Image 1 (spheres, rainbow, N blue to C red):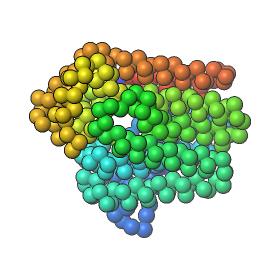
Image 2: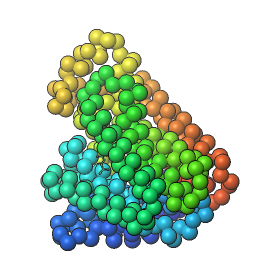
Image 3: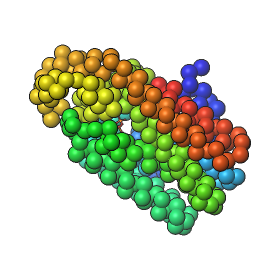
Image 4: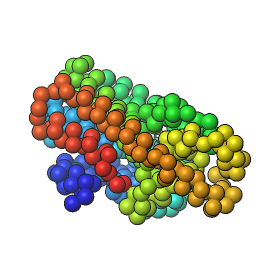
Amino acid sequence: MNPDQAILNKHRLHLEEIEAELALSVGSRVAKIEEISRHTLLGGGKRLRPLLFVLSCGLLGSRVQECYRLAGIFEIIHAASLLHDDVLDNAETRRSRPSANRLWGNHAAVLVGDFLYSKAFAVAFETGHRPFLQRLTETTTRMAEGQVLELEHTFDWDIGKEAYLEIVKAKTAVLISAACECGAILSGAGETAESALAQFGFHMGVAFQLMDDLLDYTAEEKVFGKPVVKDLREGKITLPLIYALADLEEADRAALRTRLTPEGAFPSEADFLQVLEMVRTGGCLERVREEASESVERAAGCLAIFPDSPAKRDLLQMNRYILDRSY
Ligand code: FPP
Ligand code: MG
């Protein structure tokens, strides 16, 4: 069994409960919203974020049965952000299916993103739990900041690792971190546990995005569920390419820069393949994988304060899975 399937099978019972909660979130007075929400939210996905929330609640002794409704929040926010992201990227495919923007247009996709985002907060408000709500609002604020930072660095051939990591942390790691930390916040576990889980999710989240950016150069489209080498075509200079560019002579770097236009259109497919070849050779991908592996190790270390338990083992297994996932 492949690692993706093994994780999904192991947590099948949690996932069924999470799916049932998500199905309740797509309801609207407007049929079109329901149709697009259903396509977006109920159309697959690993449910990594809600699962992490449920396991974090379990780690701290909360009754997991009571966590499922809130777990959905993390998937709904994620789905809303992907709706917006696909508009920004002009994406055609998401999770091996046509993206919502392709099927219904950009306007509808953005508005349903807003709808889902509001739904997530409506569920969160039911708790009346101020620190939880505060953590969620901080998270979505940071995500929006991350996305704008990424926009600013589109076709920025001078982007360095530091700026790249700043984007990764904001757009991806903070939501995974919040899913873990909120398990501790709602369990009333205290600051030490909250901070440990926040750090665990944060490092895991960085590893997740590093692997996503690596898979963009290595995966097969039918497995990954979205076109590969898409980042480069969109003008996103991610870590594999940052490493490859750093290894070039200045003249070669300058030549590359002049051939690639900010519109994202490569002058020829041959130029594009040349960049792809450059990234795939020269050890760049191995360095990114090593970096992701170090982040996974850092994440695992953050759970050291918790005694051994099935939930802790599950969290550590999920963390290791980040390096093995194929989509
Ligand atoms: C996908 O990354 C996108 C994100 C992780 C974050 C998107 C965030 C926003 C649009 C702003 C916040 C919006 C809300 C509603 C909270 P990617 O582009 O690297 O992955 P991809 O290759 O799958 O598109
Ligand atoms: Mg994207």
